[in-house]
Image 1 (cartoon, rainbow over the protein chains, first blue to last red):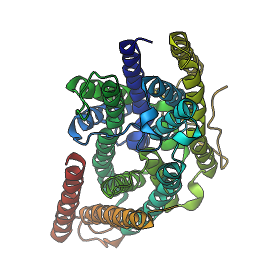
Image 2: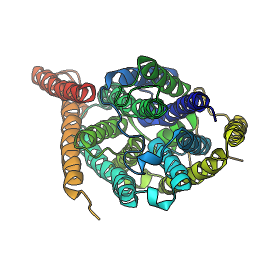
Image 3: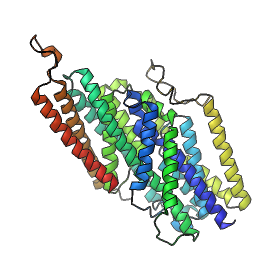
Image 4: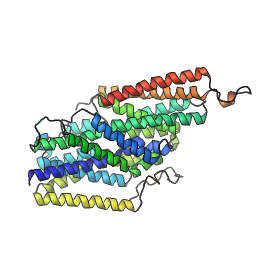
Length: 379
Length: 78
């Protein structure tokens, strides 16, 4: 296949992935702020979008590897990247349809692992790196975040127990506006970076950029705008799950959850073991729910989220592998993958229209009477 | 298999210290701004009058929390 054509295809697919990454992760920063009314839904997504774009431009760190050393990088060519991105996008769309927060990075790594597996055999995958960099942090990130959030929330309620409720609500609402913005900015510096890395390294392998080049300005701009636009579209289904279905979140809990998320994300990034933003934020929200009153958390929702997490990497890998196998057959295969993925994406979107969740109805969830509510609305 | 437990422990300790500190600072600021609790006011003085000490406490706590937020911003940007 013509080199420049597959490069263009990779760039477009990478930007599409960045877009799904954006709307998948709006909930991380804004779900509790929208639920407590610290921001109106529209204001929340606008702020998150702007901070994500700003974050894309702020970060100076250049991604050195596409996969973070999980697979043999010498086997990664544009076709493998394209197949991996396809797997990641489809898994992101499916979990969005089900309203489940899952890690976009894990989907991307899963897609790349599957695609590389087909292209280079099982030996091309570094399973120890997968265990150390993906599986273990995925197990620990939500637990650590949840435990910290439980303690912080308990202390916040203890400290302000004798204060006037309206002052407490106002104070923590103001705090929440700051803490939510911090999460959004940290997200922008982390996640837009990944797409820039993928595009830049593809350009380098295609010989269009000198090895070791920083991302060209148009790549930074396009990646920033794609994630910002995605964030602005708002993954309302996931926002509803995290904001309304985990627990009845008050502004004090929203504030402690977001503060915990920011602290865990920043410390993990700077101590050299980056944790998934989505998993940290989800853990914090559950912890903040449990910190006020253990029984008020809907643990059934947690179970469903954990299930989605454990399927993220294998599912994206499976799709990535299938796409890689098809795309390796030549131009016709690549076209089939592209058209097939677009058709599946359109199908998922069409299903979502049957039961739309928008800025207008994101907060109207019938109060769950029982301990559990169905999250999956794919019917 | 090598698991970097030391880094994980460091992350947990640093993050816990940072978030509990910020949350407590804001909580004390709220407490300071709230003034004396309504049930404590026997008759003299409106319920929840802000005391100068409370306001000073709040200002101090918010200043400290603000500094921590600025350090966080510095970490994000740098």
